[in-house]
Amino acid sequence: MPAQQPPHPGAHDHEPEQQEDSRRILPWKVFHEVRALRTEVESLRAEREDRQGRLDKLYEVVHSLRADRTTELESAHNETARGYVALRDQIVGRCADVAAAIPDRYGRLETHVRLAAALFRTVLAEHPAAEEDWHGAAARVLGGDARLGTVTDLHHQTAELRADIAELGGVHRWNFELHLGRTPDTHLYDLWPWAEESEPLTLCVAPAYQVVGRTPHVRALVHTAIGG
Image (cartoon, rainbow, N blue to C red):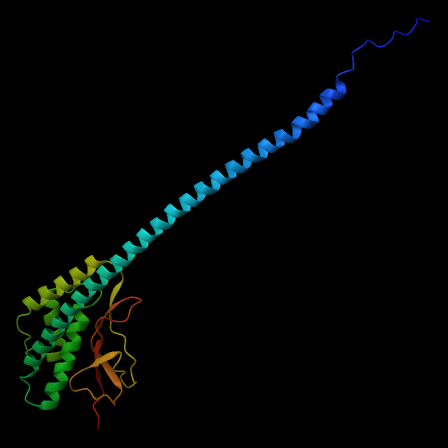
């Protein structure tokens, strides 16, 4: 049986020292990695806050632009609403001139309001009216012999008003809605000159000028039943 060789001197002499060195190096390596990771996280957080700040500023700009646009549109609708009131008064005045030829007072007043309502229903319908449509609407109220007279200027003004409103965008409507049978709320309606506030509503003569979702810029002009 061969004799055992003695261990080679120095073969394992450094192993404990190497293990001790590894134990010393590992915590420092972890510490440096943690510190590098923390620095990276702080950098990402700063970058995120910077981007959030820029995004908040963009939101402020967008909100300001929207507010400016809303103010601009509101001002423009106020202007076209004033144009509508002026046109409405002219049409009502023209109807009064036509009805003045009727000798009977009751017939004159009734023709005035019915003619005005017929014209507004025609020229402010969903689709634009032609000039001859004015005369057709009048004939249905006045009969074949009566004449409305020239309406070329009124027709052009109506067309221009509709075009101006269309250019503004948004959802505009001519609101003819009426709570029939109820007494009129003067906060919601303008009363026809000879209408009685205590009587129930019977007719929307001229529509409200309204942008959907908003209170009317111009209230509807309405008539009531004739009191006894």
